[in-house]
Image (cartoon, rainbow, N blue to C red):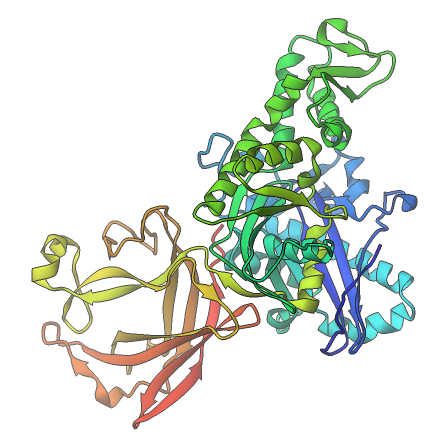
Length: 598
């Protein structure tokens, strides 16, 4: 059923697509927006390999490869899970998670070995590219076949089509760059246009747009209300705290940095596998193929019905010929106790509650809206209502199924943009060369260094944008930085300078003094990560006639007094450089290069 936006569209005619590529399932939503009309938000509900009558808006995030070539996708690929002639790409989304999100179920750093391997010779970018190309093609066919004058409309608008990717709250420009590269390879965006046509929206923000669109009777939402939205998906739980700035028109602002933890439905499936392997050890059904079939049946049926009230629960995996009463198997049905299934949920629920408690701390939050595919689990809902309700926070759900909350919400976001301010998740800053002062820095003498001008310096981390800073369309920051450069007349100097923007992701306050002596090739101390580089060419700024001489080495150097300007255009970061020439302030372009070190 389509959702109709309650205010007229005011921009140029467009087809808007939104891709929610989840760990286990994927959804695509779209809208054909015409100026002056109320746009409808629709979902792709016909996918190859799935019964048309089902109207299912999600497909499995699975690709079947043969000899390194993608052959089948979604429901069709699922048929080849146990076929030795095919290699399966699934659960590949967590491989893109930043290190700060990669925690195993014990709370330690995890690695990619926890997930099924990628097909041989196929990179993660190639997997994403193949899958994006597939869902784009199916979406195109669905739009053309289910929209009046669909072919003509698509042909006329597809070159300038905005495409919104829903991403976990914990992803940043590094992951966005990977998806951009994959989209260009998939042929859905040209390299020159990618910056303008590809958008990246957190699953938390997409979900709040969906939740409020499908809860028309939220009489508890008034100006000044603070509430949370938690999106529980396949591998991540994204929680965001919002402050209602205005009720009519509805305007929201993030209160603090959003939360994102690695927890979700796949971890329940992983634990149930371990339980089944332990329970069936010694039986004829303990082989990998039988256990995998049981896990799939558990995920598709048993898990979705389990609410904790049944003393026994059944996994239907075989026929009437499959019997082993010693192991609770009768006529192809494996019986599990309530306690056995609850065991599979323990660590996931702990992670979700812990994340919510951290986010809600120090705030009076009366309501938490629960969305997401795994958020529809009856058992999870019941546990969260009991635990959080006991602390004064009421868990509410949306009136419509929320499996496609992110995809629908992303389109609604593009059309309405209810959120005007977003909070930074980390401290962002630069490594700054600070003049060594013996009276202040004596204990750092051993890590000081001599710069091109012959002066003694120490490295410091200068925070430019503190964590929890609210960024909106009016936000702008100007950062002054003097660059001490080698001789600009040197033929090897091409005039380009690079500013390295770092983020502090540690739990303690960001360090001020940095000892970089033990780190090489831009390795950084734990907790610091390079996020982006700002590149600008100073060829027109530097004056070789104004070089100075290092009194110790005799080598020439030049001071470049410049400032970096950072601002937002929509949700996208922009950068420029400022300098003064003959007493007049000048402004020049700068490029933002995301760091894609995974």
